[in-house]
Length: 288
Length: 288
Image 1 (cartoon, rainbow over the protein chains, first blue to last red):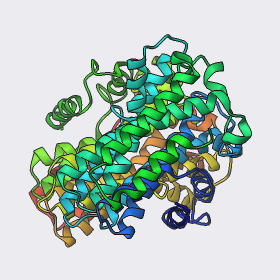
Image 2 (cartoon, chains in turn yellow, red):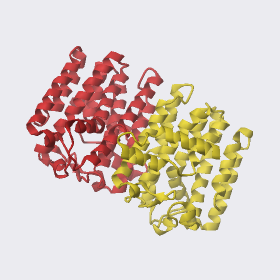
Image 3 (cartoon, each protein chain N blue to C red):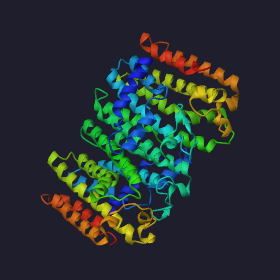
Image 4 (cartoon, each protein chain N blue to C red):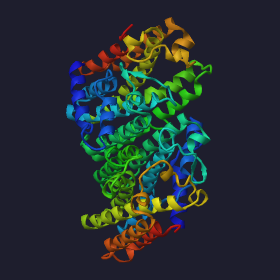
């Protein structure tokens, strides 16, 4: 994993405009928002799915970077005062604290544009039509029926009692859609056949949900130092979480079940799915 | 022009998710931000350039809608309290006033995603590779070295004395890049050859600048009622404009010169450039 993370850091540093290019403050802030931070879970998933599909690494780093830029933009906007009003992210001041609100808004906007620009200007598939389909998938995953829609559902659910299916529907949009895109774009870079894509999609849905359950568990129990962001905030803001709805013990159990399901989705695959299996373990077992 | 505007209104209404689809509040606000408003200058330019290149209208309405969605998202974000803090737009309360700030942020984010989704999921060119190039152009025009970068330059220039070349550089990014994209995407829908694209690009740069000069003149002299947005605001905010730098009379003269240049760029073309000529006149002669 460390090798891919280092490769991604270098790729992102290369794809982002240099800090000296005008407008310098915006480019510096975009680099601040993206570089030297995060576990790069989505890029790791793109590379792991790409390995299962036999994709070339130079394609995967473009697709993974595009997904990560969408993720990074969403964090910058989510941290703004009108959203979660967070001051700490990945152990550093959030972008609007380090720079200012207007710059943070533009950083998120420009990172989103850059994600689509990357997918459009590099050769990622044998057929340009397949590449257009990758663009379509990422745009749909980011939009109002994907991640941005999940944020809206999250906003509206604050302080309200949710059922487990309602909570699940929120997370399928908010985090699940982009995690699915990370996996499916990796598979597409290798021209994965329909049957493999269906299998990887099932895996992606399962680890996407697991990721959120584990996040809620970590938020409930971790200190800010371990998490690298303000902890225990969901509970204080009255946001429904898996822990608040089903309790800590059951949420941990659910994460373990989802890990099992993810492994089952990969069962017919051989050594080419090794990284996908490792990631399912990493997502569920990190820090608890 | 009225026929194309009506056609665009219908196309945008069709491309935007219905207000009843979950998350309903977000989709309702996205429709509020885009529909029933604006002169649709960019779509008109896309259709006019497409006519000069012999493009099919069903392609043009997709390309024009994508450009208009990027424009609409930028207005929603520019109006936010941390940017221009505007309460009136196209004669209606701005999105964050009618809904709330968090929803307005997500509306802008989701409109940007939708723009790229449209360009990826409809057939717009004979070759998918040409369509990828259209996506790349729109993404570059929207991003940190295009529109979003222009916003950042605008932020940093408030209250500072700018030279005319500096002001021009700001507008080439802030409004010029998207107007160029509107024209070039229209040309691409018709598979315009290199020579025609170069000519249309020159036209686009000229009318893009003219558009901003006229905007500054209108802002300086119009009432809020005529303009449909808060007037005289640039001066109050200490923003440099063509009027503040060169005076009202010289700014009007510059607009007329730019109109002349736009017509010159089209001079070798025949009746197929009729709409482009009309638009250069419309952009410069509107409301003064």
